[in-house]
View: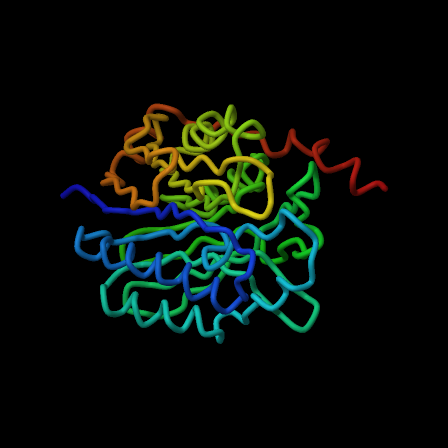
Length: 293
């Protein structure tokens, strides 16, 4: 019997945040996502990934301590708890990217993973933190992740998470495959002119090089008052052969859905024996320089 899993991605715009308090912004963005979660449930989606920092704007466009107020503990914060209830209600696995507070002043860009029975399975903390170009000042807000590259056994399959800037680094993508991931979700917030030429290259390459499915989402629109460019949507799923299975629009709030045949993983890996033919004993030079310093 084939293992078909219906998966979904959200892509949502955030309006001008001027004149809005953090609580108002959060309530508005939560409302948008709650509507899409209900749509996903009606469509029979079994695993749904929300976009990066889903309950607010991409505030890393500036450096302002105001945004520290959006942090929550994980899993004991209100957003994770609310999503646990929704996951149980709909029998849906949820990947929930939030701004995590470990303790006062120690914050992470995090995704909580919740199983279809509402149980909290664990979290991934974004490993690679950019601080570059006007508008991507993430080191002001996040510590680098310290939990490695966990893979979560959900009701419907083995899931890994990579977040946004992580996607530029093949090492973690390979680590997720070695740990058994069948689907890797990559929630992102990225703008045209900066990264768009890489959007369908890098993440498709991760799927091919590691023989798993990738689902990646990006927010949409121009977020004011900042002017760092257009978030170009184009959320998509691709299979282990690099074929794009579904693709979102460039500029519309929507749910992107695809049926993933997990049996394809075995078929592709029988043809391309990348895991068998790896030579980890020959790769010591990749880390030797850092270790020697």
